[in-house]
Length: 227
Image (cartoon, rainbow, N blue to C red; front, top):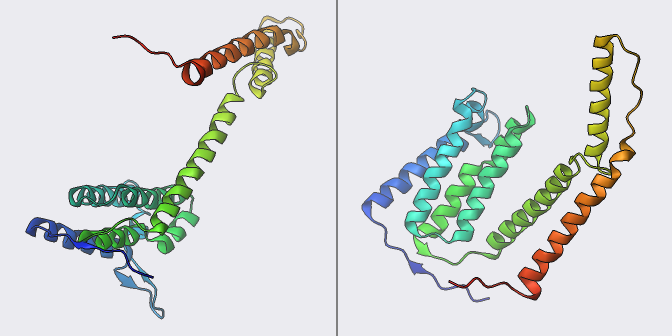
């Protein structure tokens, strides 16, 4: 199979110095020390992660510097996105107690990103299929997660038959009983949340009409504003 043609990328002296500094920092953060009795290397990043405040800033600050250098060199956008996702995965999993620190030892986001940067720093290369597959998979995962988050939040709207409607009814029932106890009055009884259904029907109808208007205005008969 014929390899893709690449063109050398001339670097200035400043860019060379910054690349060397970034390489050195990545090595310190992820691969500075050898675990005794093994060939596995660890860095300061998971150790710094145990320090409140400082550990949470080390990798993000390095990622910002790395992305700034990538932008300066004109690295393909999809490769920069892959770098961002590498750091995001490291940060999100790192929030888990103990497991996050263990993951940090294995994932080595800084080493991964410096390899990506150097792969494109000295030559004009097109993004690989792996780059596109990784970024596409992460974007799809974000879309699925975002959709599930939206559905979860939407379910908390205080309208029946959503869970938010039942929660609102239970809270109002608790408030009524608390006030009744304070005033020495008898228990007011349960709240009939079914009486709120007409309001839910009205709101649902408004949302349906708004959705139809937006669909027609965007897709069927696009609206044009005259300047």
